[in-house]
Image (cartoon, rainbow, N blue to C red; front, top):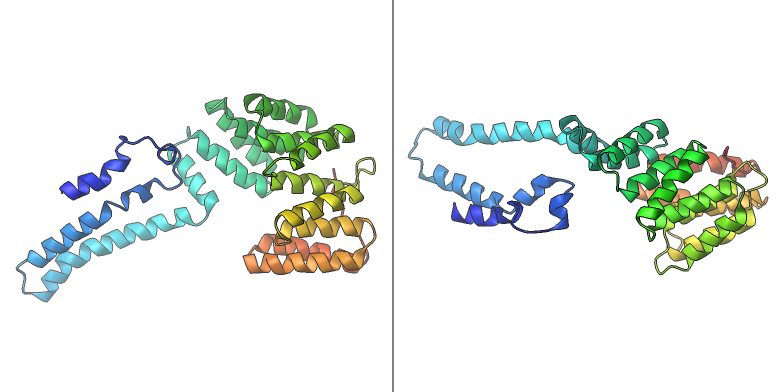
Length: 297
């Protein structure tokens, strides 16, 4: 029992650690103490003076079976990140972190309306969250609600001027507003940082390569930026290769676009990213038909 209490100590609040504030799976902190309980149960089982095998099985097997059923019932919750945060919210609607992280998942899935609702809920509960402000701004950008998006992106920058994601979203906002000089100035500054924010770089580059707005589309610059991104990850990112292929196709270099898209597809397959695989396959068909890929702004 003493060993159990000692090993349980770190999660009793006596130690100050970031992970104790925001822990992906809080139950993991109990693993250290679990062997003590297992040892205790085994010791009790060994001291039982039961000669009947059926009785011994019932005494030891029923608890194990019960724990197995409980584990089986809990397993679907941890199917993926989305199911974890949805389960968290069913149990605690006031968890701002769950609202925010579920919004991030939904934003990646292009479920913009639902993502927006969760980001707004997160900000109601945590008004000083610069990440939620930025992600809400990005969600609004994707819906072409530029005036609303700018307010939240600027708020994020005000809360944390060094947060790279909001800076890159500001560049994307300027590009959508056809203010290319302002956008490129932010991009140039972002590329000089010791650690380049790759998601922002790829999103901005992709917009330049695929937008249907001829006043903004700039496949030559997009190619340069995409190659820079590929170099930073040693040409192993299917996202940057996919973007580079789109930039080449926008310039009429379809054979090169097919080669790059095929390489991106191979990497996506090796990573088990089925959604990206389907998207690249669709674009590759266009390149083989000598057609560029464009997205509506």
